[in-house]
Image (cartoon, rainbow, N blue to C red; front, side, top):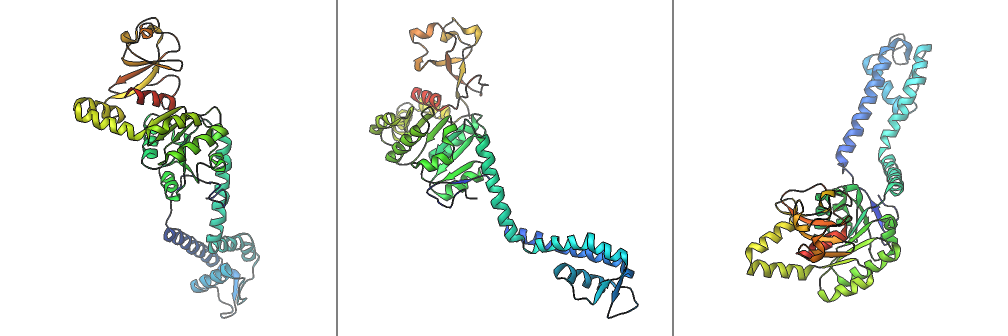
Length: 362
C-alpha cells in the first residue's frame, strides 16, 4: 500500500490482515461454482420455457440446464438452447444477465482486487491524514524503538496515536503487524517526516542506532515542527550536548545508562533490582506522574498521599527533600512510586519530557 512510488520519499502503510493467495483463489472458485449452480437451478425450474435444438419438443434436462447456465455465464451462448417464452426471456434479462456480469468479475477478480486494494489504501491514507493529531512519532523500530512503543502502549497511549518511521521495509511490516501505522523511509528526510504528519505531532521519540543520524533527524524534526517535544537516545555521552543544541528536549544516553545499571547491580544488587523493576512497567514497582491534589496544596511533598520521589514545578525537577518541596502549589506535578498503576489526571505520563525526568532520577 504505497502512497508514493519513491521509497526515499516515504511509503505510508497501515495495519493489515494478511490473506493467503490460495484461500483467495478458493473463495473465488466457490463463488463462481455457487453462481453457476444458482443459474442452473433457475433455468431448470423454468425448463419448459426453453427450446433445445438437440431435443426438440422436450423440456430441458438437468444436464441441459447446467450446460445452458455454463455457456451463458461464460460466453454469449451458442444458440442451440434458447428461451422461447416471455417468462424465460424476462428471467434471462433481469437475473441471468446480471449474474453473467458478476461471474466475469469473479474471473478477473485478481486485477479488480489490486485496483480495489489501491483505492482502499488511498482512501485510508486520506482519511488518516484528515483525522490524525497529537500523535507520537517513533523513529527507528529496532530494539529501543520497540521497547519505547511497548512502554507507550502499557502507559495508555492508543495504538492509533503512534506512527513508526523506519528505513527498513521489514521493520515497517513488523510495525504494521503490531497494529501501528508505519512510514518506510529515511527519517532524516523532510518528505519522510512529512508523511508521518509531523506538523500535528506532539512528540517525537528518536531511537536510531547512530548518533549522527539522531542529530540529523532532530534537526529535521525541529525545523518541521518547532513546538514538538523531541526525545532522543544516543550511544555516546559526548554527543548529548550536540543533540540538545540540535533541538532535542531530552537526551537519554543508552550506553551510559546501561553501564550505570550494571555497576549499581554489581555493587548494590538490591538497588539494581529496584531500578530494573521500575524500568519494567506493570511488573512490580512503577513510576507515575500526577498533579497535586487539592487537599495536598500547601503541604509538604513528604506528606502527600503517595510515595513522592520528585516534584516537577515548571521546567524544574526537584527532589522530594528539596526546600521548595516543603510547600506544594497548584500546577505542581508529583513523581511517585507505586506498586500498581494509578490513573493519571491531566497530561499523559507518556509525554517524552516526563519520561526523561524519570530517567534522570534513575
